[in-house]
Length: 459
Image 1 (cartoon, rainbow, N blue to C red):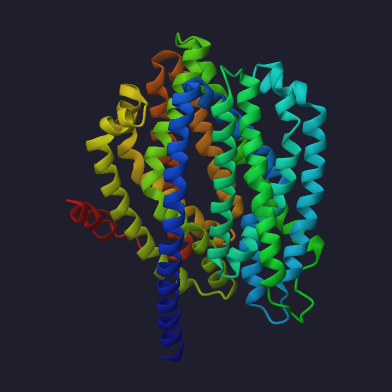
Image 2 (image 1 turned 120 degrees about the vertical axis):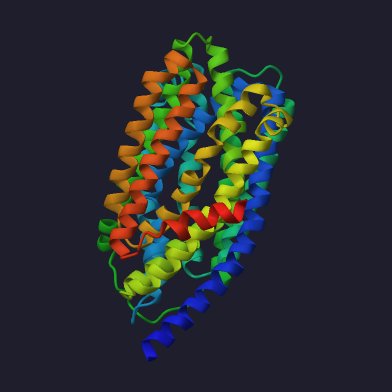
């Protein structure tokens, strides 16, 4: 009876905490996503759709380098600091310093490689040697971004989501201000100038958020007497498998992004048309499809931390209980979002400057939105439970499917091949995640409650 009462009390606290933090993070993420979408529209109208395509490729490459540089620090910090807080003699601050030490080692190494191979990276990845000077500025963004990621994970694990949110907002505002200022002053910019504008914005944003986190940490952190339960070596041994999964996902995503413009050219598009269509898809279609998921994205970081605590305590009942509720809520919300996007996708695409092409793609991909949104929640629970190996293998299978379909169908049917790749990869990948969660937690698959009820709610 005491155990049941404690579980109910923990569930009540969990619901209260997750609702409060989700509301706060949702408001923040809604601001960021809206602003980001408007920024994409501004760049598209000012510099052309092809500029967005170039920026997306640069962002994809920078994301890959960033994952290697920070060792997936946000996830590592969220998990290990959460566990450390629940252990006797734990010292979360030591975990933070271990993370910063590892990130500095990795980011400085990656930065040196990027700087030395700037010409090669520019010519092979971007097909333009004039981007080499832009690539050489990446190290500043990599080092500052890596250390910032450590602080974000630390504050998230300590249930201080408001600090992480404030840092994200500051980073975005500074980055956007720099990009807008340079874009307004640019006159018929080349590909190299477009990339320099983006990197300048990222550097300014990363440095501003890092300074903010350092100031907050210096005056807003607890001191712990314990020596800590993990050494630097143990932290690194834990981080490297997670980093490996992140590198794998980022590499496959970068490969997929690089292949789409190439395959669009094979379908008959010119270089400019290929980048324009790719830019419309990445700047208008994808942000629109993901825009309603702001609530789920806000919850994901909290879910990783809370699941890690429950897993560390061996409390599968609690994981099973809140997993059931989260999945049902997600399906209700995502089916409703898909219905709205199917009905209003065309005018939304035209309103945002993507024209008829964007509108059609939004409507075509909308039915797969429930699977896309389920990934956010399922991955958070899976990573919180420490199933990194499964997560990495599942992402590998998902991207193999996506890339294969892109290579086969995009040269033949153009833009619609991208939609086909999203359908196949998301349905296969997320069904696999759901089955794994059922087997691991002992959850029962109840079609009436998990599928029929959400559909009835929507209609």
